[in-house]
Image 1: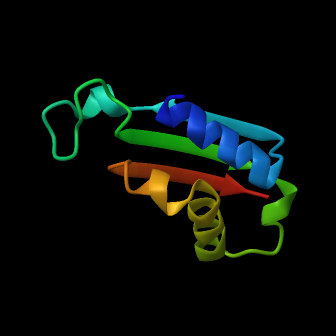
Image 2: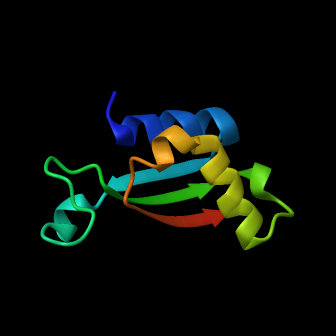
Image 3: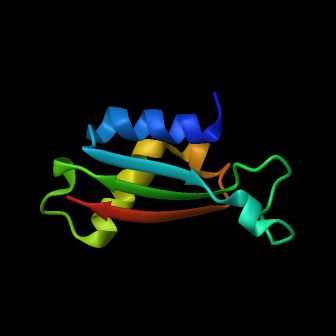
Length: 85
């Protein structure tokens, strides 16, 4: 399973999102710090779920990081998040 697939699976399991987009933007960072040959180092995630209702921006980011798990987060160089309830 790729990192992108792991991200998608873990976020779907944790938040049952009504919208989820996971985009590997690694190729756009070729030659920059953190780039890994083969990609899967830089991701953009847009997620919308009722489970974020009542959370501020920091709490939402923490919830996403917790759902992804430390094992996966440490493999990713950059993770851009757009989170809505």
